[in-house]
Amino acid sequence: MSQSPILRRCVACKKVLDRKYLLKVTRDFQNGVVLSEGMGRSAYLCPTESCFEEALKRKRLQKALRCDIHSSVFNMLQKQLNTCIDSDSEA
Image (cartoon, rainbow, N blue to C red):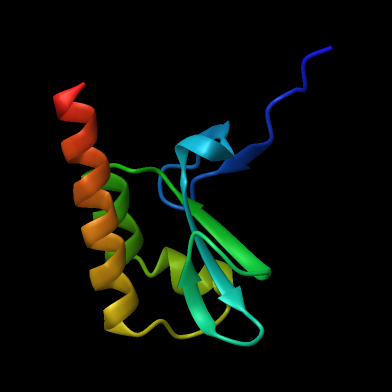
């Protein structure tokens, strides 16, 4: 019996996808805002440059997580996005 995929919505483009294809940003109750880990309020983002730019421009992550996000988190997200894009172009 196969399990159905766990679906999440991108905060930028509003597409519903399996969560394993999205980048996860979490407002952790202990560590603040973290990427791909932690427990707490989460927001998901497609691993595309257009969704990242839209989320940055319109403050979609801040609204979804209901908190301010430090620029270092966006820098880490940009690096993770670049590695996702690089791995996709190699495949």
